[in-house]
Amino acid sequence: MSDNQVHDPLNFMRSMWGNMGFSLPGMVAPTFDIEELDKRIKDMKAVEGWLRMNLSMLQMTIQGLEMQRTTVGAVEAMGKMAKDAAKSMTPEAAPEAPAAPEAPPPNFFQGTIHPENSAMSDAAMWPWQMMQQMREQMQQNAEAAAQAAASAAAEEAAKPKARKPAVKR
Image (cartoon, rainbow, N blue to C red):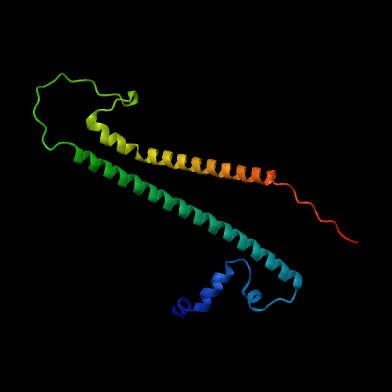
């Protein structure tokens, strides 16, 4: 008999509904009390709002992670492109030169750029340069739109106002 209880779907449903905080007979037999129905509707709408809020937060989190993944992928691709460009600009075999005294390593913050490092330095600045170009273009577009709006307002102000025709009585 215990095997039948394990595979009994009604037993499973009874245990599931029993854990929800309300009894199964109340769900099977509808109530005719309007106040009780209003209370249930209000409760269900509160749950719906909570679930919608959680859904929107989940969607925003997913979108944020997708944007982060795309950004990391783009940065990795740019790094690979810069590395490949640096490899292609270095000569295959450098001629042997007499040993020179070892110079101290260049300080990055002094702005010293050696010709052999210029391709890599330029590649590292590509995102910054692109953002600066976009900012300049947006600023130019905003200035052009402001000038167009100002000239349209000046033209409108320069027009003489039309008089209303006299109404015959």
